Image 1: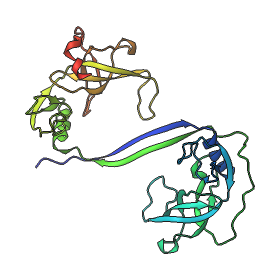
Image 2: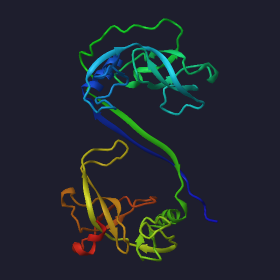
Image 3: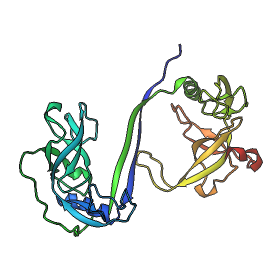
Image 4: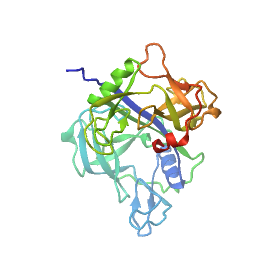
Length: 313
């Protein structure tokens, strides 16, 4: 039996978004230890606030302060917190309806164990020591047996409001490529590119998937393609990725390798970015010890005729 390949894989990107007046006031309020909701035309107070009534789709912007105390409406115990979660010790995920609100806010409750948490439990906000205008300004909720806190009636007007946030999206998992892609990866180690041909439509797919995406039948016949190919489409990258030591601008392209019926992607080098074009003939450039091409460069051949690759766009 061939070795089953697997490797840890991380997909990560920072998502930057601007804030409208409602979300700006909510997050700025958290920075100032104030919780704001919005009041709908029928008198409901929504926390976290939204810009449109989920029932009527009406535009809502009437800000109202609610208390930092509240009631757990439902919960689930988290035995093993993951990286980036609110607490590093076991805690409860809970929906908390703050006093004065008609909807519940999802956050962590710091409790000694699941037996200490129950629906109807009274809690209060534990504020983070350093606050920047994010949901993490609420460090967590904690059990509370005191009187209901009274909001001060803040209007939602702040100096230096938060106007945008950066959310770090990340997914950690273990990837196992399966039979077809294992053969593809092993061939790349020998500086060869191998796809699989569908027994029905006879198309060659690179990278192989183990089944034809058009016909749905299993594939097993291996076909070596390339190494040269044709640029079908491309984009110019002007934003530098923090984990790539590549100066911008550079070009990333879809490349139809000779003999393949599916274009794969790769970086184009050895040519000014503004000279890359559809139909450009390219070949792979390998670096010492690499398991895949570092980039593709022009071969010097005449550009491919559009009719030869138009079906691969």
